[in-house]
Amino acid sequence: MTRAFKEAREAANCFAGWKEEQMPGFHEVRVSARHLYQKVGKDGQKIAGHASETMTKNYQRDDAEIVWSEAIPDLNISEITG
Image 1 (cartoon, rainbow, N blue to C red):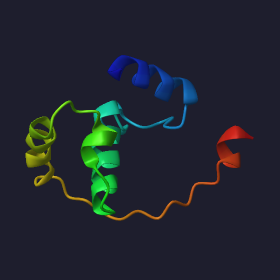
Image 2 (image 1 turned 180 degrees about the vertical axis):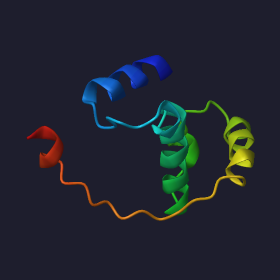
Image 3 (image 1 turned 45 degrees about the horizontal axis):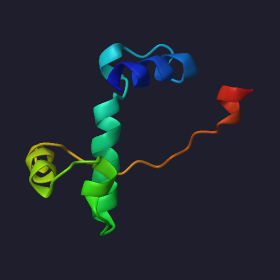
Image 4 (image 1 turned 90 degrees about the vertical axis):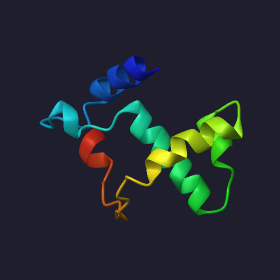
């Protein structure tokens, strides 16, 4: 999945000029989705696809180190698609 995500990300060319370490990866997107689901009171385990609550909690331990910040989406998709 990680490789396929990277290939799709590069094919979309949304991050032209960005360094590799600046581009979002598959796991970053998964963590963000789980975080947002939980933030609004939904089951983060479902979106993460973990088989057990224990596994979800294992990953959540690392979330404490993440500095979450709000972002205002201001992308005009026609600037990318033409």
